[in-house]
Image (cartoon, rainbow, N blue to C red):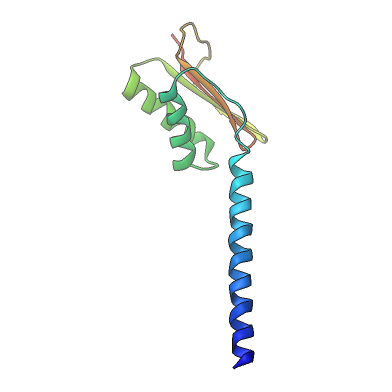
Length: 117
């Protein structure tokens, strides 16, 4: 009986250690979001939504961000994503309006979405 109690205790310890490792890993990942320069909360949400839908698929992310911004906010949007290994961009990049751009660094990748009119 003592042997079974010891095995059960070891299983509990292993479970607790695994939980702590997962929690710490997740916490350090959340800290990889650097300070952003989003003038619009809705654009920030769009970038985070896109990254969640298409992780590490930069061409899909850029296309989705541009399409969604145009559907939600009107025409003339561009999205630029630059990763450590290169980048993906869509149309010209210049912003002449206030509160119409968002730039963020997430997981060593730079994201920008803004008006291009």
